[in-house]
Image 1 (cartoon, rainbow, N blue to C red):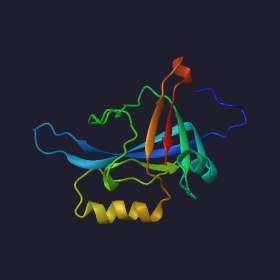
Image 2 (cartoon, one colour; image 1 turned 90 degrees about the vertical axis):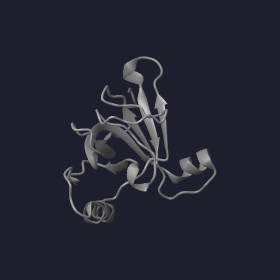
Image 3 (cartoon, rainbow, N blue to C red; image 1 turned 120 degrees about the vertical axis):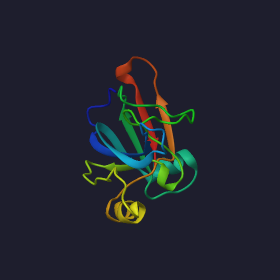
Image 4 (cartoon, helix red, strand yellow; image 1 turned 45 degrees about the vertical axis):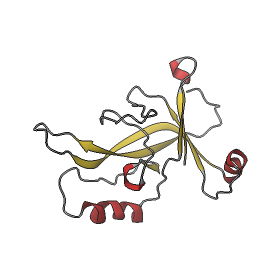
Length: 152
């Protein structure tokens, strides 16, 4: 994605909620997969949000992410198999967490008693995060111009 030189780029960390498949056809376990993305644009602007939506918001964020071949689109509500990364909107726990900067919080991917209280609530309490409200795929022109727009 070719952006103006004056635009500051940042790193973001995303946490995707997914089910790990099992080899023996048993019910898979859910966990959060961590992915760090670089060269993103993080715009925090309440005026722009008001202009676009007509509703005031003090903490509206527009995130621009350069296209990556590891991105898996879930725009048509298909289930994400867990390869690469995606941006998922959804009920509270099942959507993507987005953190500005590189976040080193690790959710364990093994069976842990009371996973929600021990890890998810701790994450939400300790980490400043965003949840996606809208994802727009800008896949027009040459591939080096493609990007995702995520509104939080």
